[in-house]
Image (cartoon, rainbow, N blue to C red):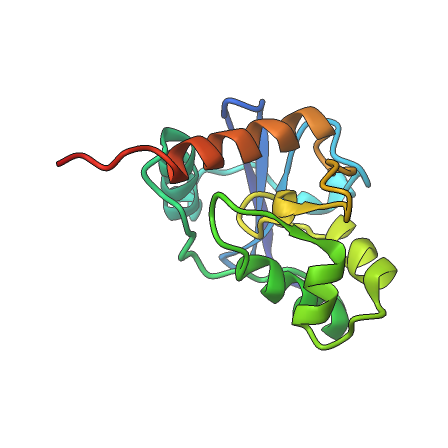
Length: 167
């Protein structure tokens, strides 16, 4: 049986985001000039139906009122990629980890390059926060949506995470 896919496009502070649902579950979130480029022919017809919760949570994230996502996800990938993506979701909002730290967290401390490759293939940018992974020197490394967007996301998260709480 063939999976049913639909997509929608929403605005954000980092440009238009394309969200893809597979059988009603979020399976992709792509930015303009996403690299590697997804096969847009496989996104299915455009529709806003079924994206209400994902859209609301993304707006809350960009507004600074959401630090975690609770929507069901269905990213396509290998078992190893799913393990890495689960580790990415464990990186706290407003913090970063290195590829080596992620490799150690999944029990594969020598798999730094494989972790980097899985990170690069994450189909759910922002929601699965691959932007929180940096090089061992602390340098920002590649990002599917471009390093400028990665910097924006990290700076926004840091600002929100370290903002004084109202009394």
